[in-house]
Image (cartoon, rainbow, N blue to C red; front, side, top):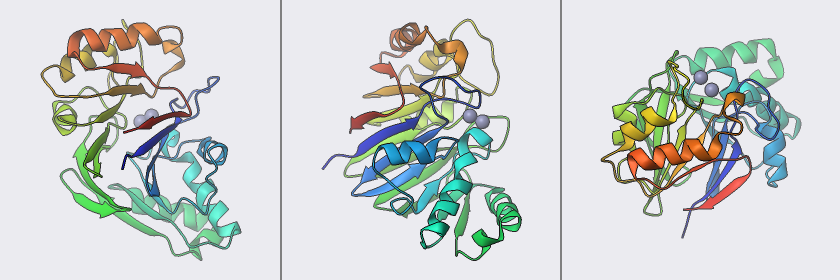
Length: 247
Ligand SMILES: [Zn+2]
Ligand SMILES: [Zn+2]
């Protein structure tokens, strides 16, 4: 059996046509949501998944473009008479979610469960074995390796090119890696194609999909993918919202 991966949101905090904020749906019979930026609830509805379908969310970090719609998802479940969410995320996730519950007391009445993770932690949920690794970002952030059905999917979250994330992705069937800006942008906390291509060289990657694109990337998508291919040798494409992959 294959895993179904839907890129719900491939954009960032700055609005742009066609790119909702960060979110990925992975289905292994049961659906698992990675990140939940603004627009995710609408994107889920577009793939036929209402609030009742999503009860577990794994967060890479707490920047708004990755968590904004978690509040909307929790509220949607509350209004639908459903149980609270299971939320996995980096250190600080519990305090952050408790502050939302304090602001919106109806959420407090739902029994949500928050589990904080650190690099090298592993856990199993929804049929996936998940391993967390440190990402290099401006706040505490995690990348994840998900294994199920003898398939491996790695999601970088937001990160500078990182040898640890590259090692995490070694041997994977799909690496979903952020590539925020085209060349020749020189940025910290995020990734550009040449640095990513260099980082991924000498790693065994069956497929790479670039996500988390800033508006500056518009019109440069093909050249960004080509630059990663030339340096890494890995088959690489730029992701778009609602792109579906069977892995
Ligand atoms: Zn971020
Ligand atoms: Zn981001």
